[in-house]
Length: 143
Image 1: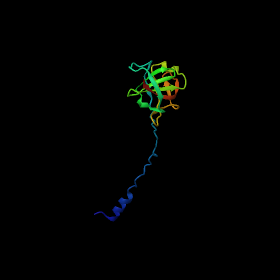
Image 2: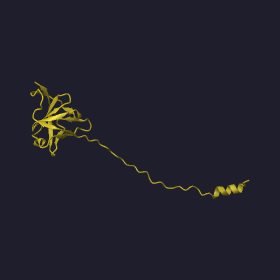
Image 3: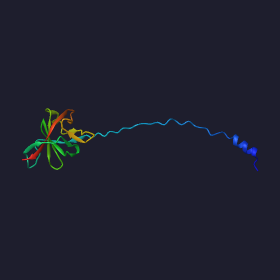
């Protein structure tokens, strides 16, 4: 049998558990911002379609950035965007943009909040580094 003195001796002879200091918790923050850049291949001159004459109407203020299938550089001040359904929207630029025909294609950066390309807000970015502000859009209808 174990005596009470032995139990008391065992209880007090054990060292109390040691507390090991833990390093302070580290926090970090990672912010990911999505940046979408659309490369639009261009073709100079009219596209090979049966209808080559277009009637201009008042166009939208904005077009969807992902809704552009291609583009035709009509002149140094005008770019026709071809939409997936075959429709066209003409972007009239604020000034002549000779950098657009230097390389084949250009870039568009839709606004990250709405994904739209808007007149008087967005620009066409030439691959050579130039930037051309969009003045307005015109809807093109076949004559």
